[in-house]
Image 1 (cartoon, helix red, strand yellow):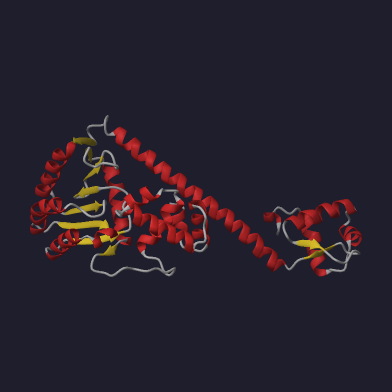
Image 2: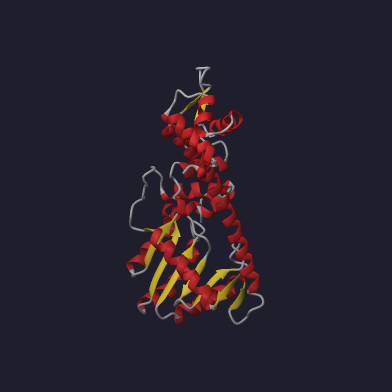
Length: 334
């Protein structure tokens, strides 16, 4: 029954005897279980390490069994702490693996022209996106990270967007939550909504991306600078995976007309995302870029959350966040 805790049969038998017959000493326990006193003392040492027994003040007994409920709570707390730390490390490892996968995907685009097509420079990217505005038939899905968008870019996008919406093409766009503080972007979103475009916001987005008719997608060659170039992806499995990524983000994102959502721990979506990014070990600068805010704002949010978690490091903040349930198990493992 207790072998999952590392107890052998003798140790378990002795512990149960100590609960039912607390007045028995080492000699009596040895007689009852048919073991030597040395074997009993080794078993008691193991039980003591697991906080199931403690040294008694009664010298004739030497040891006493502790309340199993309290002992189990202590063991569970220790194991939960170890699990939380492992979850944080796993999350960081998965994040690193995802970055390596992105690099690999980028390198593959150089060699498989049938499934991947390279676009070099902002002008070529703009021309291709304008072409999509004329050819799209059913739906355009967009991740638009980067925080506040330059007003000239927003104005330039209105004519092709208007053509798409006039033709009945469904347009869904996810911006960063931080754009709610930028008037130019707010005006553009209202313009889109008035014409039937659907807009939601998320605390962070994984990549800049446009998916057209669920059969081709455009992603940047370098996430750090989307102006360098882009890849048009025609590969059916890859596009299907990107569509699933968009749908997952869309489901969790907040409709633009809604007010800020506060979770059961009193955190906004942006604060919850910062907690998750802290578990990945991201710097304030990296967090700021993911949220589309200034370094100063990211530093302030991170410092406030670490104070609330009573954590002295990002790793400790991640562990404590998992322990307190601030990060759901599935997010900690993603």
